Image (cartoon, rainbow, N blue to C red; front, side):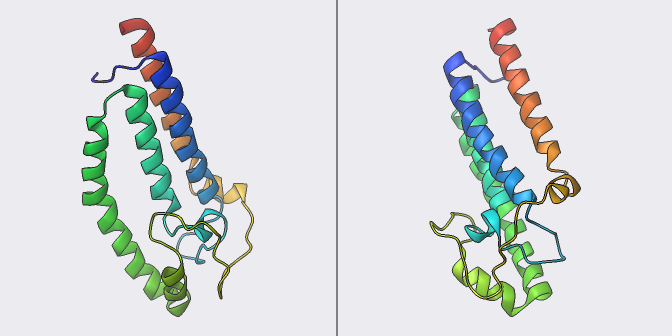
Length: 160
């Protein structure tokens, strides 16, 4: 394995990755894919909080593993895969929700979050719904987080 975790790197990286995981979890509890335009919770700040959470998680694991080149690899992957996916999803949301989505998209950034939550027309005051979290299978990200931290910890303790 290419990672070289140290106690400090693993601690800092896991905290950063946990922030990304928390953002993903909060987002999953607000989205009803293809049924309702998500504009509450993290979606009031960015149109793609799940992808932003993934990016934060990747940064955290790059820190934890002590491999900064992983950030470049992830940036390339993100640009090659996630950017076209976000564009495709934007087109799909425009078809599904029309002007409601277009007004939202004009006010809420694609990825980098806005400071204040969007409260424009069509904004929903929705609350986190744990059923949506489970229906969206976001627990899989938690399992992945635990496995990656365990592997890095094992590498640090047993392999060095």
